[in-house]
Length: 80
Length: 136
Image 1 (tube, each protein chain N blue to C red):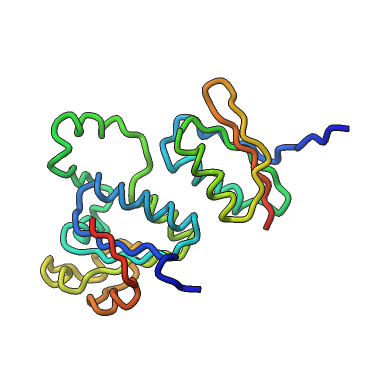
Image 2: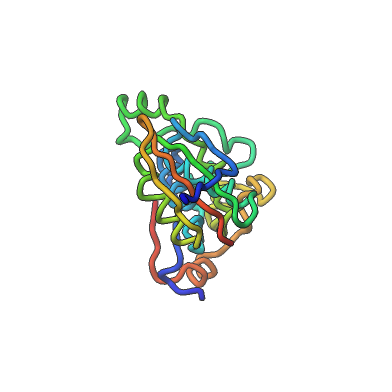
């Protein structure tokens, strides 16, 4: 059976310049509870490297990175 | 552990919005990546941190030219002071006013935005900053 990850909160950061999408993600992670799954939609090219680097550094889990018409969706699980 | 390579130490001297924005992006990134940040504000940068004018127009550095000016007006990013506020919220960021610059510009501590933590002499800043300092 396929496990479906349910998104707890989705943030539309499309159009925000760097480092806006990352800062929005950090804010949502800080406000959330452990186990929450946060999705961020970004059109900022910097997010492609910034968000994975931050997620690794902050010891959370990058569940998926998907291209969706012109934007990238980052799904992150809060681990601590 | 507080090692040099885990720190970002900046001396901000230029007070224009482009330089301060560039510095604020670095600071917020460093705070996100759990690096300790030490900032010393000198001269025109310190002047831009006056509480009554922190979000006013501080102009651009000369190399921006007319074209840069136009591009800047299109920029929809967050104000540098707001980025620094967020950086302080998520990380360990200390902002110090240079004592000499306070005297020279006749600024009293209460004239400064609350983003500024305290007034430092250069020796105190160097003691906190470690070996590598970036001057903007």
